[in-house]
Image (cartoon, rainbow, N blue to C red; front, side):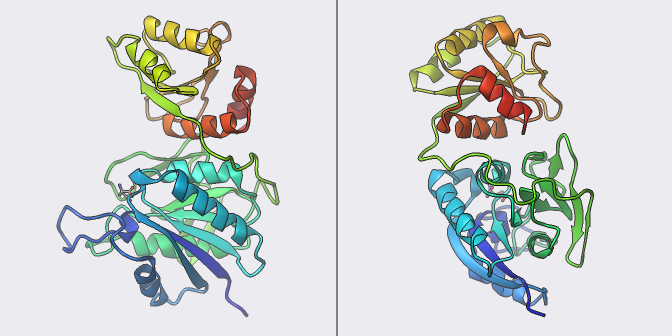
Amino acid sequence: MTRPRILVLGTGGTIAGAAGSATGGGYRAGGLALSAMLDAAAGLGLEAELVGEPIAQIGSQDMGWDQWSALHAACLAACGDPAISGIIITHGTDTAEETALLLDLTLPAGKPVVLVGAMRPADAVGSDGLRNLANGVAVASDPQGGGRGVMVVMGDAVFAAVDVRKAATAHIDAFRGFPRGPIARVTPSQITWFGPPHRADAPASYAWPQSLPRVAILTAGAGMDAKPVEALLGIGCKGIVLAGMGQGNAPGCVLDALAAAAKAGIAVVRSSRVDEGMVERNVEVDDDARGFVAARALGPAKARILLQVLLANGISDPAGVQAAFDNL
Ligand code: GLU
């Protein structure tokens, strides 16, 4: 039986990080080449052929348009290559949720695309990178792995891009899914899916854009005034995501300034600075009157990515933007 061929796109992060000490606290994300990681994986006896393609060697805090464009192009080519069964992206954990959602929105859902990272560098005692990579290989090679959109595999769990978020700064068990928890549990030798593929052979939801418009996240805080809203409009933001208090709330003067921006054609999405929970329309804030959109289950970082993709695809009216958030 031929082994599945998995394309591994390397971008850096802690999974490619080296501390130079098994017990030290500091390290450099992205210091190790992808080939070193694949050499280590070769010793595991995995039932797959791993083909490496370096994209970047960075901490994911520096992830942006250039790396995303390269990742999208490589994934798209691999989706059309019958010799490739699945795709793994090694990625820093800080922005894994953003890259995962961006690719989820803009790639066809046929083949598994799996982001893996690590919370501990490769040479730290108890490093999780190689296990996460082995788990990622299990997911990317699984015949049931396609048709689920982009996934993030961390801590023996598989999360859908739409649900996943980094919820702890340093714990090994740092990722959570909301509103759904993990869609599968995985070890290098076993996967338990909790449901069937729901997007089998679905095309990309949105076209890959020529560029991403400037959209800023504005975090609300008690006692703030509306000057940050004016500042964001002054630098040419086409959209603003409010990381609001509670259910996407903010002081009245801030909501007034955001409503004026919405009336002037700026897309305004209310999300929450709270870790978990829905932001629904017209609960305490009158979204209908103010021209706002409610982010529903998306946190600020992913709401920003979705809004950028929508604006780049010509969807900017509150009803159209709201429909996209509702139907995610
Ligand atoms: N800040 C780095 C990054 O996101 C390291 C964090 C990590 O990978 O866990 O790439």
